[in-house]
Image (cartoon, rainbow, N blue to C red; front, top):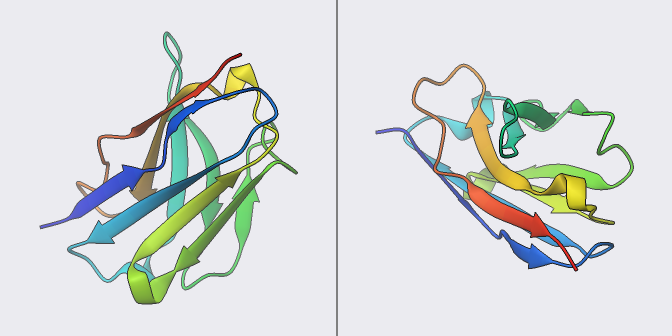
Length: 115
């Protein structure tokens, strides 16, 4: 059974940092690109960052370039998103996803950036 579980969200002040984690199971993790997406209230879900398999090419949305870093640890079936210099507009539910794996959307983790 495919499962992804996001964690690490919370409330942070503007300029602060958070590190999100996503633990995956039920598929051969190292073979798939992994991505982080986010959805803010009233907006469509958008791609934030993607990392190739087994850990090569990374891409970022223009809005997070230079502030967010995606990484993966294949031995732990885990992908991370280090978020620095957070802004109020980063507030959203963050989801991880295994590209091409059916059922690999988790429940998400809420990130709120507010003073």
